[in-house]
Image (tube, rainbow, N blue to C red; front, side, top):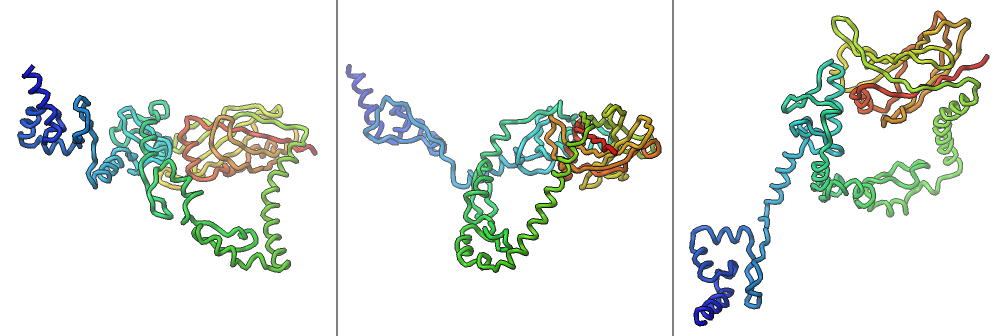
Length: 376
C-alpha cells in the first residue's frame, strides 16, 4: 500500500511540475532533461493542463503553425499543383498524364490540337509519354485542392478561396466595376459598385428630352433588327417544302505535298435525294497554322450527283447533339449545277480560337447540316 500511495502522490504532483504535459512524473522530468525534447514539445504544441485537469485523461495535442509558415505552405502548393505547360494554377478541369503530371484543360486541348496540325503524337511536356483523351484522365482531388487555395480579388485585393471568388466578384465585392442603370439611354459612366448610388442620384440622363431619347432608341432598334434578321430567315426557311438534315462527321486527312497540310472531309451522304460531301481546312490552308495563335476553320459543300437543272439551295451548319462547341448559325446560299457543284470556302462560325482548338483536338468533328431547297 505504501508503494501505491507514493505512486499516486507522484502523479498528483506532476501537474504542477514541468513534466505535466507528459503525465508520467519522474519519467517526464527525465525526458525533459534530454536536450531538444522541450523544444519538440513546444513545436508540436503539447497543451499543458492546469491543476484541475483529470490526470487519467490522455494528453491533448494541437499543431500550431508558426507565423509565416502558412504563406510558405501556399507557395509550395502553388508549385506542386500548377500546370506543367503554362505554370499557372488551373481554373477549371485538371488532366494528368499516365505518370501523374498535371495540365490545365486549356493547355491539354492546345497540345492535342498542335499535335493534329503537326501530324505528331501529343506528348507530356515533362516526361514525354503519349497523351490523348483516352490515355489521360481528370484529377478531381487536385481540382478540389486548387478550388480551396486563396487568391486575390482583382477589385478589392482581399483573399478568397478560388471556389467562391467568381461569386464574390460578380455579386458581393463593393469595389467591382459596374455601370449606370441608365446605360441603355446613353450614360457612359462605370466605376466601383459602392459609388453607384451616388452617381445615379446625380445622373443627368433621366432628364434627357424626348428628342434625345428617340435618337438613342433608334440605334437600339437597329441592333435589335440585325439580331432578329437571322432568326426570321431561319423561320422562313422552315416553311420550304423540301428540307433535309443529317449528322456529318469531318475526318482528318493530309495531302501528299512536300509540306503536308491538314484537311477534313466527310464521307458521302444523301440529303434531298442528292449525294453530297463537305470539306474543311484550317486557317485557309496557311502554310504553318501550328505557329499561329489565331486559328479558324472554313468549309465548303460539294454536290456529287449529276442534276438535270440548277438546284438552288440554302444551307447552314450547327453543332452536333453531343458536342459542346459554340457555333453561331450563318445561312449560305448557292445554285448547284453540273458546272458549279462546289461552293466557295466559307468560315465556320465559331466564337474564337479556343473553340477551334476543341474541334482540332477531337478525333473527328461532328456537326449537323441543314439543306433547304428553294422551289422556283
